[in-house]
Image (tube, rainbow, N blue to C red):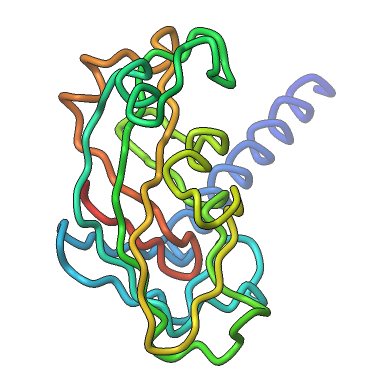
Length: 193
């Protein structure tokens, strides 16, 4: 008798857990995302990554071009060799050229864009900006991955994302649909590259 009561309570608890999981999954807010085609303007608006105090509001981003090139070719553009590379085993870079405009952000010099937070997302991978390669392509910024533009000004930036062949095979990424993610919350802004 005691055994039947224990089994009955266990079944009742399992049913309660399943009902709760079903309820939460069907009533929770769905993640919002917006996909912007290459070449079109993406207004960041009130979107952010970790903290709404980031305040990228007023900035507009446009992907101008993207390409995957070998690390050797990339470094040769700047008179460097693979020996000068920051990471061993880094074979390719996914280069994304963007135009960033400060249309109406009044926090000039205080807040703006932090490229460290931006990433490339594909079907099952995420690529991050490689800071040493970034400093080569954007010399006028002295390696700073954080920018704040004057109002009504724009600037082009080359963002080199690292691709280690062991984790990010060239063939897989080259044949996948990839997006440059410039915000996560409340709307994930994904620019097609």
